[in-house]
Image 1: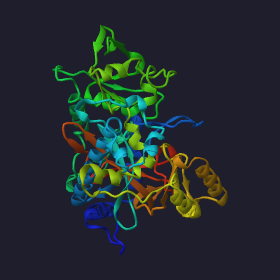
Image 2: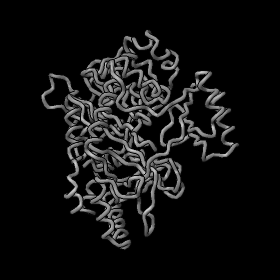
Image 3: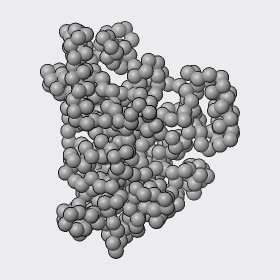
Image 4: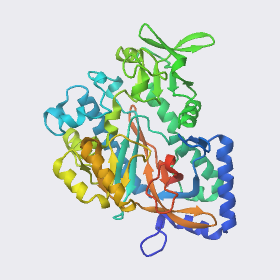
Length: 461
């Protein structure tokens, strides 16, 4: 929000002046009102393994994060480039595997990934699109540049909080919102529905779309129900669907109803017990057979999780150059892959300064932040890396940018990241802004809601 000299940046000047006019009591009242609205609307997030209760609101800070329009245009262009390359990579590794044959990515890196699905080899999704909805995490370092921290292509969550946060902000700062010319986010659900409709077989005039949820105990169930309601489509669970003659039907009070497109919020492992985990009670037996026959479309396509693997992430810049013959617009955070002997030695020698992450964990779990950890924790991770080097990457500890948040009766800086959402349908749509996640614990670099993080509205002005 502020330049190094301490004065507010140009795009934040109006917000700064507005806050200056408010008393601490005014800010507190507006924050409390926003939180009450979240509870009333049921905007909650389930936290697994918490004894004091599983359902809570994600802390919402009412001071928006502001991004200049020109900078957003550059970021949006970079996100589109990245999604195109990732989609080409997923299609390639499940079909011709040219990138492996040409040695751009070592074959063992892909084949050993826990998210690689041999069952998806030979699949051809509708329109050649695998990753219809993506949430890409961006961070800003001390050099002022944005870097891609990770890609989320399996079942990225958080967009419902973007849409609800925006409604709360319009109520909290209506005058300021009007004065800033903030780009709207309200059309996300219509863009999503349009992309889902575009996946239906050409012979279907009015596609029937459904959102497939694991159920009420899933951490993002609020989002599943919210998106279904906003799009005006059915919210279903696996037990609500049945496959007959390679067609998917929903059970209704009037009998079976054919379903053409499914926005799935269930991981690959659980979607079809005939193909993946046989003990899954969440999925639909036979749905992959119907998908292969072209009788139902799934978004995201099965197998997209390969691009979420953090070791695969390290090779995305090479993918962009290989498939598009372009330099990446958005850079990766410098990344060391521990399967490589030389890079592993470097990581072990410098582990006190590194962030070490397992390849497939999410939510901020299972990672080491070297500068914030003890020597005992360093040694523990050295042993973990040596025992399974393929499973770990390491990155330098970034000085994540901070934004002001309300803490009790005053403002303090807290580290933030940004998750824009990208829809790949007939065209590629990037939601202006996205979800700014906040590490509310003082000094913490972990922004995940499962680890006590909060959120902000993001204004592209």
